[in-house]
Image 1 (cartoon, rainbow, N blue to C red):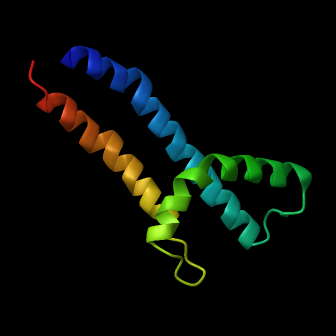
Image 2 (image 1 turned 60 degrees about the vertical axis):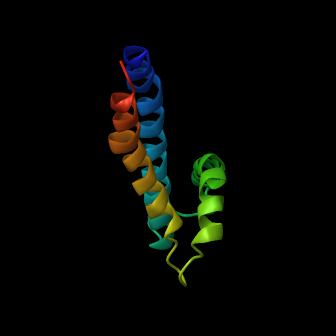
Length: 102
């Protein structure tokens, strides 16, 4: 059973968590590019890409924002989600699988 769960984690769960992490990084970089006027938020392609990233991440960020509200212009929910993804992928799930009886 432990080998089966480890395989599911390695080939399914870990890649999905990694993909969500990279989508989160792209979301942050695009928001910075909009903030510093490097990229125009009025361009149709940029708006479409940002909207897609936002539609993927918003369901995960909304519960975090209810618990930790934004501090002025600083939104900590993105940082908390990134840390949560890394904690799950690199620490918690592997430890739970290893802790299962063989």
